Image (tube, rainbow, N blue to C red; front, side, top):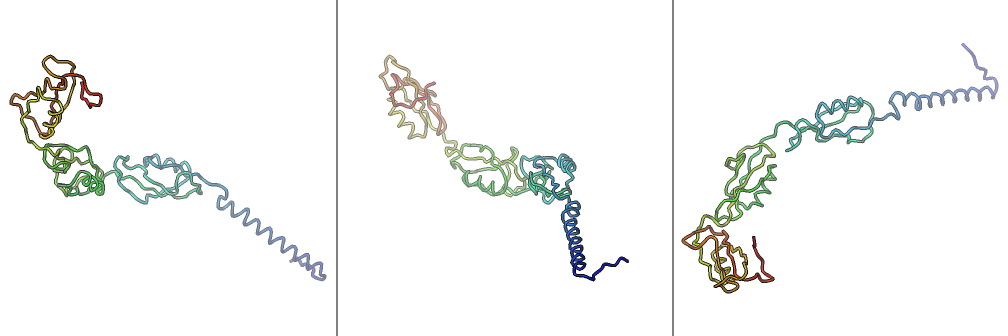
Length: 262
């Protein structure tokens, strides 16, 4: 075994210097060579955007980058492709190390069933809010003659009437059958020919009818502003409340008149 001289102060200082040098070599070698090599220091992988990809597409994308994955949650989303990626963590564009696990939320293939809320007798706006809370969608309302205006009278799903509490797939579209506020009431068509247009308008508005006017210029035997023709005629005809009576009026339209000329 080699012996180091310690006979002088210089020898001791030399030995201490050697020890310090060896320590520094070990220190820098461990932290700047071994650790970076063992942990792939400075080597990072950019996380790809997986949203919307199928499971097969996602697996290929991660395999190409030496990344792993784990499905952390599954949920149903109306309109989304079943078994596709909904969300991911870390987010796309993040820098991670090789082998990092990406946590995924997957769109389930089958929608869970939810109960149709009891919206009968409610206004359409209130019913739509309740439907939204139940994670269902309101389709185009079906209007029928009924005195209950803007009120939900029936609920339909896939063209069939259903009752509140019926189980249907989450995200489904439901149709409300809504009253028009008029019902099936019929009134006799009044005879408006020869009557002044403004008087006729007052008359039919009192009967909950609508007047559609068209001015036809000078008509022999009729003063300007009087009705010369109507459709439907007043010969014993009846129409529903809210229906329109088309009339032709002699003379030219006033400059401020709102017309339904055709």
